[in-house]
Length: 78
Image (cartoon, rainbow, N blue to C red; front, side):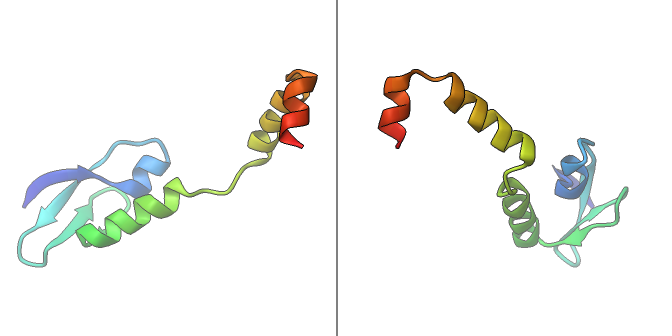
């Protein structure tokens, strides 16, 4: 088994855990959370985690930015 990548599930919880690669099954294994996945599945998990929905805080930030922008900028956006 050779170490190759960080676990996307643990990284989402802000923990860096290296996964081990099993040459026999061609799967990565996380010793912390137990994730057992192929390279493609890990890529899909990372994509899903990166496409998260806007949080309430994100929406508040956008509104604050809009509110503090100049009148000319607001007219452009409308």
